[in-house]
Length: 66
Image (cartoon, rainbow, N blue to C red):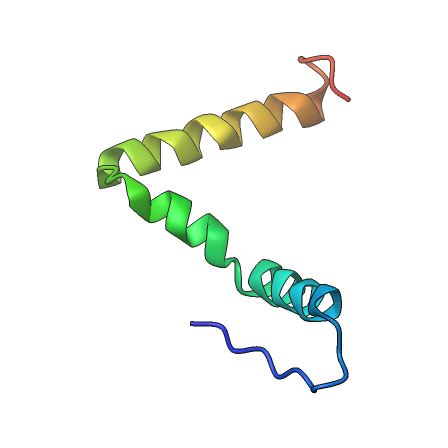
């Protein structure tokens, strides 16, 4: 749970900006989306391997990159 300290003279826009910044830093939204569905450990491992292979090919110049 995120708590935002706001003063009485502070506008709601400023408080909302503080909340968004704090939520980004703690990766709250990312964790909620990740936990929405269960993924098996074998699937996670496979995704990591595929990502590593892709990045390796990108570095070697086999895939035209950005």
